Length: 184
Ligand code: XMP
Ligand code: MG
Image (tube, rainbow, N blue to C red; front, side):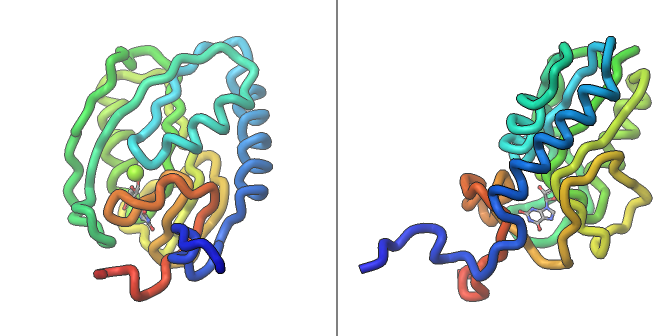
């Protein structure tokens, strides 16, 4: 008999583990080239960016520093409240630093818009945005990533850092849940 695992709750896979890992290698190589001779500060946006940050940065071959920020514009559901709150700030000063913001997904763009404004205000020398996923259909803020892993359709996606009610972050791929799981 087939084992009941979280994979049974997935309707379809949008981006496979193999595709993600290949992309992380490519993006890591790009960052190595772009930041040669520099000492950038990579900022992971918790918690969703964690697996992606870990996988791309291990493919870089430059010196860099890591820090994390936890912000929230969501309330556990599937739609934005439009409000960005800082839940955990950086431990590092960004003034004069070259920043690489690592995100899991850009949907409305409100979160990144807020972070970019904040880091400009704190006098960063440069800011680059690297996102695993881009959902252009959800965009309300005028924000673009410098490096994008994959474009996704206007569906709520989970896995590889992305959650639904804090679950599914541990999947190694990006997928869409079966309809009965939402609201269940
Ligand atoms: P915004 O709208 O500010 O959203 O660009 C950024 C944050 O919202 C979360 N988000 C999602 N999380 N599946 C998720 O699991 C999704 O389809 C999705 N869309 C947005 C995510 O935390 C992201 O950092
Ligand atoms: Mg996030």
